[in-house]
Length: 273
Image (cartoon, rainbow, N blue to C red):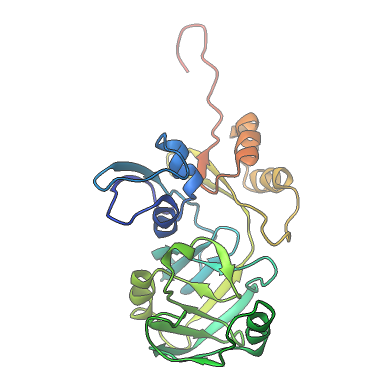
């Protein structure tokens, strides 16, 4: 598991989408769990309850793992989770691809060479067509670029941090400026990674509690989430320990967070469990 529950103090200029993007939780859930209006004004100093608990997919021995529906990047060292970050990904009409990759280059203050496909989009939308964007405050790549062996794709910062944890890019993977700076100093050229598409995740903790995480099937590449949950449960010998009514509720809500679905044993007549 990654993340958890904590308290956050609202800072000047904060709004729910921005806070959710920073921590990997939807603004809608933040509003619900704090009794707020989704579009309401946040006053600096207010305390918010934040729950960003996520299930970590099966780990890599070493490197970067990105789960597209989950909008999370996990970094592993020696098979152990070293860091995790929310990411911004490609729009449904411009999806981030799945597949294995290696890191091909690391660049700071990279000039953005605008792909012809994006130039065409600029033209269609009546924007000024730019072929290059130099380093600086207008460069959408931010200050750090991790180039991937997937041609044309990279992991980079952003000048729009609130776009993280959303599907708004042209396929590249965006991180908050602080997160990409940290990751940039940790990875090396040649390091391996994988991008997966797994909207349904199930985990059992050492204390036997079972959690389920359901993500939005954004790219429509997965089947029925209930069937997926049942298959995971059966494959791992957990089906009889799961509250399937609770599973149905987690699927209905699709909150994008890990929620407990452990079957609570019936209370016996003598009051013992």
